[in-house]
Image (cartoon, rainbow, N blue to C red; front, side, top):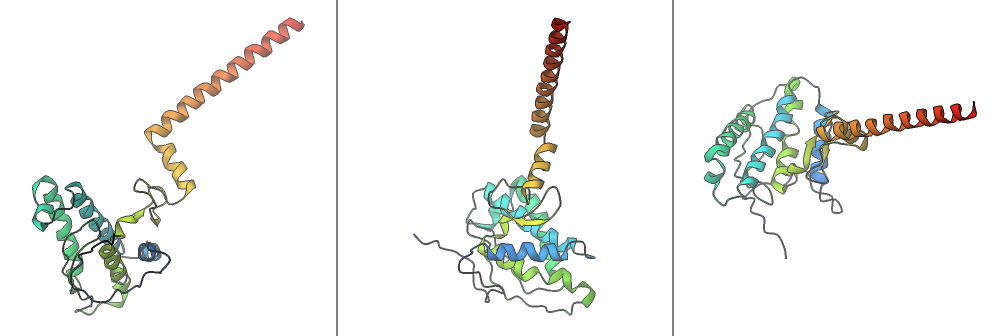
Length: 211
């Protein structure tokens, strides 16, 4: 059964997905974000990804309604409105010709033609260059797989929804800093110290027996 994707009328993708890697556009976004990380003003670009993904999460909580109004109503809707306003303000800063629709199970829908209508200062061009990649990943439904590591702040592509770390090393550090990780560590240390005390008592008993 083929998936039906309602993305609206839009121009060609800036990045064509690799035929053997359906997550290629998400990996491209993560790469662009890591290249720009730490550069002046680039936090705005990173915030765009967070805001789009948070709006998508809100839509998911209300089971991706068919009406756009349903995403922006109620208690969660107020949060979605604030996020959407920040997204529109960012895109409007250089007057992107983008009309975002709404998130769905298969990605955002939107008729759009991606182009700059305002001249962008060269010193700030790095802030807006990744936007095309970000929007393409949003429309394909893969942007929700792009996340920032809790430990080292590197952007990566999640393979599972609950992944919060980019590597095994960061995953271990993240677990150790969690309540569950600290509890397990404390339990291990209690058993370890109890084992040391048993060993010391046994050594003392043997030494007394020999004497």
